[in-house]
Image 1 (cartoon, one colour):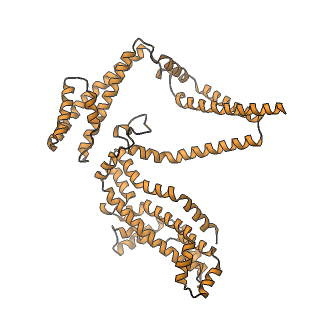
Image 2 (cartoon, helix red, strand yellow; image 1 turned 120 degrees about the vertical axis):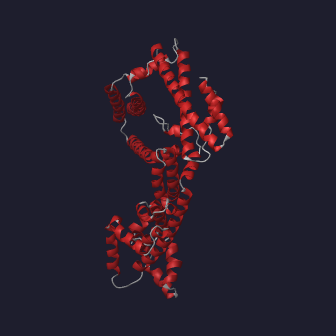
Image 3 (cartoon, one colour; image 1 turned 90 degrees about the horizontal axis):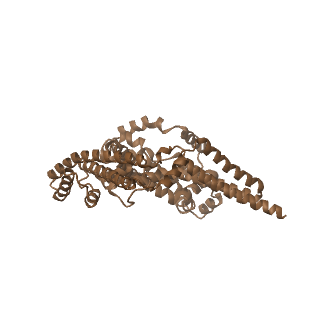
Length: 468
């Protein structure tokens, strides 16, 4: 008995050690697997080469910065901004004298933001700030490497990293296999029900965490990029966090470049009226197909369900011709009228209505309740979970609609957010931080809505789809 307990304990320890080794080896492989020993080699020769390279880069940046500063001075002379004109004149004098740029002037220029939001000012500011960062970073490299000449600063760490970078892929694979073998040996010694349950839970949580990271990372990257400066967005290798989390300058510039406030209002108006009208028509149609007895009810409902197999693209030409004939082209009404009913939402609500006992309906009828009053006083309150689901799904679909607005909307003032974002990606050019800020404004409302209502959506779809 004691031997069995010892084997079980040994197996548990081996499994734990194996998982730790696996994590360490994976981290090392991802960090050093594709690196070269020369990337981490430190000696006076490599430091001298780094000093020469950084000095040349800083000198080229100074030459480019001199030309950019002249453009900035000309711009602010024309606009009459004396404060900024004085600041950049000081920078020009420092560059002409080839003096070191003080941290105070560098910090003052880095803190500047566009006043007008115009393209010329944004471009000038970006060029000057990025070149100043290049000069500062390379001058710091020169100082650090010069101070380290003839010393052993960082030598031990560099040697360890160079040794790891010198390992071949075969070595890393063997270490990974060894870690897996330790886990397998431990599981062989301790394959009790508890260990199997723990292993299954670890595997499940690892898969869930990996899936969550894959799903959430694009949204995190969008929001973090919206808070970065233009220089931080263009860095390689990329930075995963902005230097300032409360930097909302990109949002201001995006709203100055395109009328996103107008796009937002248009999306809210279209979403509100679409949800309102579709909800009413869905309730009425669901009640008719679930409670009212009329000839051909099942046949008509089956025909409507069969129409769900038709993709929306097949109806675009017909809908577009209709919108043109009734004179709704290039209006918000054109985004609402073609979607005043939904077969899918009617199917969900009908199934939920049919799950309500008939005895309740006939009891209400005996008491003198009309069909109209029974619908709004009894059935709608009972069907609130499915009704909320219909409202939320319809709001998501209306808010994210893109292809139809792209076809029927021509003027800028009638664009919705998705269409406005598409137009902004061409107008914003290569300014990724502004595009990410605009994307955040477009996507964030629906993300918040889904986070708060995801359980309600799943619950309502399950009830409406399974009952009946």
